[in-house]
Length: 457
Figure 1: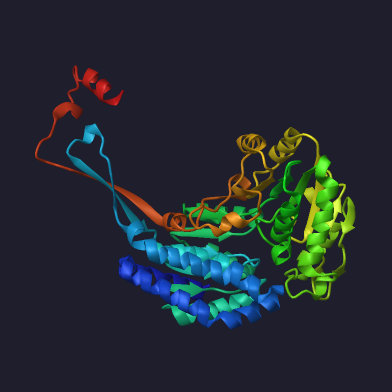
Figure 2: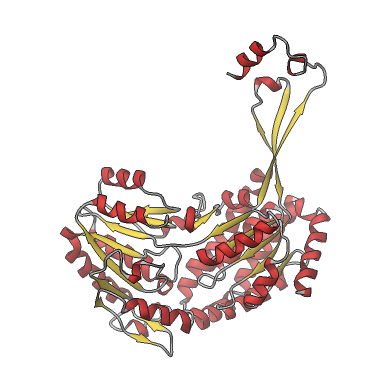
């Protein structure tokens, strides 16, 4: 606790020095981070393999490459984003100027999860640095190998009083949250998000919460079934299903159900071979606790029509399709966060909409269809953090789209300029002339009300 308090004090002193306000300082630190990612690339590959059995291709594509791409955009646009913005002034403030100053909050806390332990720590950090803040990172304890490499990377790259990393378990989390920060950015489960928000409320600290939920995937009768199967398999089984925006469950129209299930089986075999346990491209469950939870969900309802093999010792769970699921089954009661895909069939899109709306608002929603009418009907009747049409998870790759949840799946957003805005206080300043001073606004008001009504109506 003393170490945390000392680090936080050092951060505040560094921020008060004003060094982070300089755009050149921010750019140089972003360049340092990008160089460090390439320098630590092999160490990161080894750490990801140890924690999640994650292939080099997947590590670069979903972790290192995404952070590098984010840095590139901030380096290109930082000057424009940080520049004060002039806006129009209303007639009541005639002969005045109105400007928005984009200021850093100060010292921010970034708490990241274990499923994408590099990307979900460093992508928010890019926004915090770009906006001019100092930061303390708290990576997840479960992905301990990646967290340790991340700690080394940050310590070598940045001044400790500028960016720090705190590792450890729940005791460290509690100690950090007892401190006062100027902003908290948290990625994790809704349950932990409530705890973070409660602690932040004690200091009236603003927060961004990137949570999760049960993201539905819907396949309409006019969908391209072969393409849909490939994209569903990719999004669902990436990182062994441990992705916050993975398709959580599948609604498929009865007319194309058999065709889709056949294509899903073929895709799993094509992606990972006859025995996915031997595939270098299929990951593992993070720990025994999560393994046991998924094992219970797998056998809680329905019929396994593909997969189902497990190895507790290596934390392997095969890509598994479960048919005959209803909305009331246990597997539909919580976010799955693993390689299990429950399948529900439907005849009317209205029934799917009713089921989706009966639960919490999801982080993502996916719809496969060739028709615009059903899409507009679905989007107008439901709410989600984001989503894709005729694809899954790929909306995350566009840094010009905001990424974030709504309701139970989170609050606030980031990526690209939205990251810069999230970590900035947008300060409104009106500068008015003293050359003349109209008496209209000052008492006594007398018969001035008709003039005010004319100006304000």
